[in-house]
Amino acid sequence: MAEGERQPPPDSSEDSPPATQNFIIPKKEIHTVPDMGKWKRSQAYADYIGFILTLNEGVKGKKLTFEYKVSEAIEKLVALLNTLDRWIDETPPVDQPSRFGNKAYRTWYAKLDEEAENLVATVVPTHLAAAVPEVAVYLKESVGNSTRIDYGTGHEAAFAAFLCCLCKIGVLRVDDQIAIVFKVFNRYLEVMRKLQKTYRMEPAGSQGVWGLDDFQFLPFIWGSSQLIDHPYLEPRHFVDEKAVNENHKDYMFLECILFITEMKTGPFAEHSNQLWNISAVPSWSKVNQGLIRMYKAECLEKFPVIQHFKFGSLLPIHPVTSC
Image (cartoon, rainbow, N blue to C red):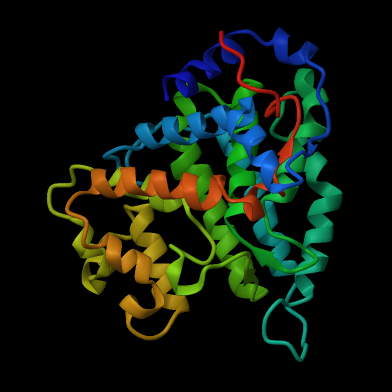
């Protein structure tokens, strides 16, 4: 975690190193199950998990309505996500026999594929323009798969990687931490939920009732951190409809629960068995620690997820180098 916290300052105080860096178009490096060892030893893995844990620490005990600094870069990222949202409105679902996987999603995705670099260029200052093609790849990977019309935790990881890259080149700074989760990632979630609903996207690699959630994982981690040491809300309360309705605007975890209950019918214990089990954990800090372990095991250490992850100069496949 300390590693994650130590990374941003050099970039934020010194613009020249990233500008002289050789940026490359990220590509897949994990082709077979034995390649997973390379991933777990890589600088990319260390930086990615460090980033997730740093943000986890940053939002601990804070409500979404907490007052925090909003930089120009954060505002520009929200504007980028607003554009993606507007394109959904401009691309209504088409009539088709199949209920799931509406083909209009492909039209929406083609627009992003074409415009991604231009969108990222609105966030990245001109002296870092060379980084745009590399960073834009992670944005394109973060919204689902246009062939299968599905979305899962690998796509969510690509968005976190996109934000991590923006930190590494100094566009986002240490004091943007809270806004990265509460403003940018939360807006991303809203847009993804709208995509999932509008185009009836399939869950990628879903474990059905045995998975945590069909689509997301990170908001449960960061959302449980928000609730650590809460004066009265305990894990058992998130299966209580009244508690969720009264507090979801303050807590990302409860917003996720609300979305699940809107999308699924039947008893909560049946459609979301893993979450039901988690509601029996005595404290939010234990929930948070357990979810981090589960994220590593179920997402970051699973070949079907990581085979799609792309590596470049900012998130490199080479083994961790000690400072």
